[in-house]
Length: 87
Image 1 (cartoon, rainbow, N blue to C red):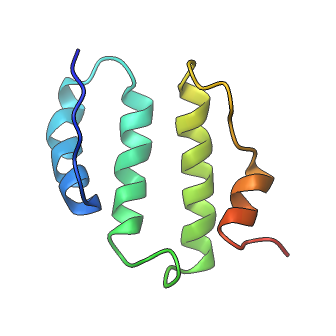
Image 2 (cartoon, rainbow, N blue to C red):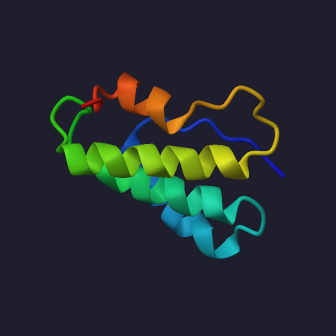
Image 3 (cartoon, helix red, strand yellow):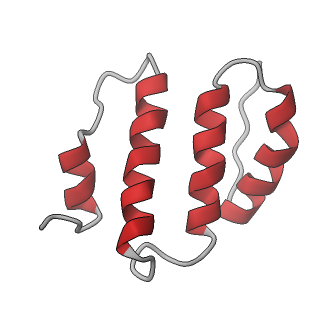
């Protein structure tokens, strides 16, 4: 097991795509993060379409749900407020 610090969505996406076939644990999180990086590479949070932001919220929830250590998880409502997706 190892921990890496990688900066930039494009770099994360590239490395994750290479590692995905070899990941045994946290594969669901890695796949969700890879999709999130694809979305985030298209633009900034301010320039992304609402459908992309909604998909990011769902991906964040998947990542949180699979992380058994996190005690302070954000709800879908919290995430929507952060991304200004409230009606």
